[in-house]
Length: 264
Image (cartoon, rainbow, N blue to C red):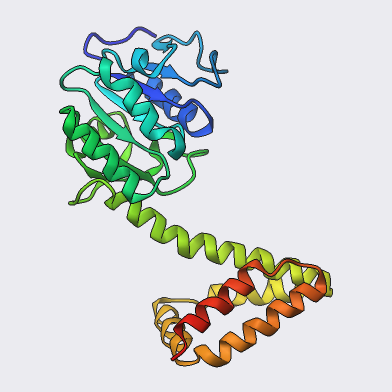
């Protein structure tokens, strides 16, 4: 496949599971992709593909790119940006897709302002496998140009009216709920298995989730504060039971601590 003369050049930093899938979809959409991953000097399925260039550093990948997608890790996000800055030409945009704190996203934006590089905070709101570039994304900060380019290539990007860090804030607030619920369910089922009641609890959890609606949220919030003392004691007993069953009561004990904090 030959590239169109006006094909956008996009650098992808980080060619693990998410980055490699995004890179493949960008190639399929007609973009030229410059990839770099220190752990994958010859990324499987990408190296040798028409339109894909393996580079040896963040700076080499960013050189000549219209857009740089940082998909490495939150720990590497700042260092990758600092390493690439000397090679970034005027008009190049930087998009950080890592799951990182809003504070780090703001730090990247401040660094970008210092060097006249627009920085977009992008939060991927679902797993990338099975979706690739069509994974739902939220974008904030200097997001308009980046979002328009990604949308032209087939991405699904919702632009938020706010600074870098806003997209990350929305993602992580949801993570507190969703991952907290998921780990509570896993811990409860592990304890139920140890007690010989896994099938019963599995069915019970499914039935409760199936009948949940917006009113359920309001009821949970009001009830948790109203009955914090009693429920805190209940979760202390639950944590003791899990310990007796040989299951570390991490989520149960965290629930006890939250109820105690909310108690009048």
